[in-house]
Length: 87
Image (cartoon, rainbow, N blue to C red; front, side, top):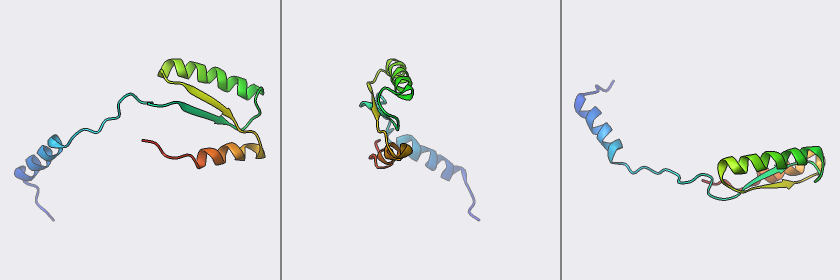
């Protein structure tokens, strides 16, 4: 077992202190897409647009509602699963 000395603790803490902070600025930085699996004009679509409007005001970012009807929501789920990861 390795003995932890005061010198190793101070060295470890100082290493963390000199590392640059990689903080994201202004999240979200681009429009958000809200995807649902129901046809346009359906009650879920209307509710999604109301929700998107409120979130848009709160986050200060545009939210795009995109209906993808078909296959009991599998089409919408597939689009979300294939979406590229963002940082």
